[in-house]
Image (tube, rainbow over all chains, first blue to last red; front, top):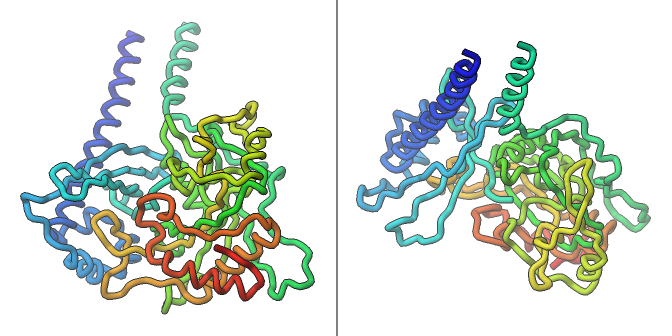
Length: 133
Length: 275
């Protein structure tokens, strides 16, 4: 009985972990659609209100997205969630996202560290922090 | 039953330990100095006021200490965040970025500057102290190595750079040196200007629109010049001002890099020579 309790607790912890990862992956799929396919109707799902406000407001942010070249399906780069970590400070997630340069002319891999926080019950991007150590 | 309870508590504590970063909030870094005041009747300016700050640290993380004579270079960064981000927030981001295998001790930079972009009024300009100067920073890239001069080599050979965790014995770390070159973090200190001075891209959603690039104000450039000059007056071996992507490929510090020459010229007017 006790062992079963421990097992259930462990499974519960693992499934929380898995659902976090799934949520983060879904978020970056949406991010990709906003940035590469200009699906700007998704920006409220992807970015925090504070981030959009600090980016000059929704209209200006959409303009910036539209300045980016739309990705063609053949050359579309994938962004890979390399690792993520939930911080003990302020319930914040840091997700390191790596650009997949496979089949790309640009052979140098780059990565970005995104800050994610929960807003209105959803994880959203609150910005990035300068990359490195 | 009690044996099971103990076992259960032990099990739970081990579970939490797996992700336990050992953070605690009672820093006593009083043995280190971050003030850069000195007595010089020739100094023509008021000292840049530097705000003190208290940081949470990760006690599971290793860090290295160094004599300040090891430091010869100031490295300029941008934070990639909003200009109003606080030094405490940057510390939280850096703690959160660490991993179980590679935990970060505390904020990577020694000084944090809040200042507005050109043509903006906010945030109010201020300098906040970050990681103490005597603690090796974590900002120039862990794979960047730089040559040592004879004095730096001597300090290294005399075991003056030691690494360890809080409340543990500090030891020499041979990985800091490769063929008489040393990790750039050991000989540099990081100054971060909060803000994002790089263009908007898929990897940099905080970046500026190409129609309206962001620049540092003259006041920000002057502040960096004065702060660097103050550092040189107190620690005369500091002779260089570089920028993050001098050391390795990164967008940091965006177009701040284009202002380093100007900052060096400004510092010269205050009687400091930088390269």
